[in-house]
Length: 188
Image (cartoon, rainbow, N blue to C red; front, side):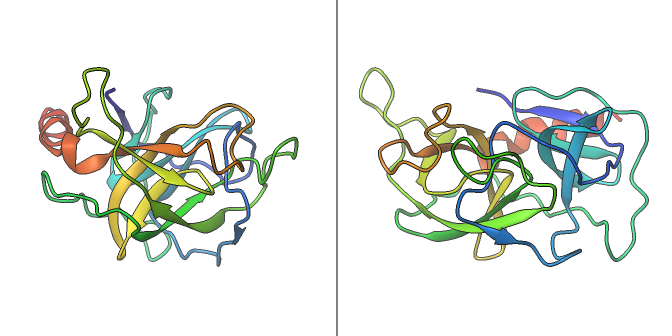
């Protein structure tokens, strides 16, 4: 599973998505200056994080944008983690996004945030650990920050099962992809 790395054009946070923060609360305005809502028209397509003035990192399904962000106290990139590093089980981490706030509920028009607890990493079909993803129980959406450090990006969850304990959400482990991310950014 590889994320997409996109040139950045900052978008308004209003819109909708198919996955989101369940059981979360409204985020304080401007408390997450690295958050991006990538939109088609006025519809939220996916979330991402500003990692450089001209790059947003997201997972799986977004397109390249046209213009760089204007940095100020409300818009700032987030620092990438160091390559490698283990994410411990049962660590409390923060997530944020504009997605649905529950099963069969509409998407949020405001940025929401919640706390998640990390679980054991997935096992591959051969029984060995997969080092590029890990899973969480609870709310989903956007970046995952543990101890105020970027650790993951939401990759997927079972459709319409976002609030069930037996269906953990899967996040891409950002540190696994740092060499690739840096090589892409060096080309621009």
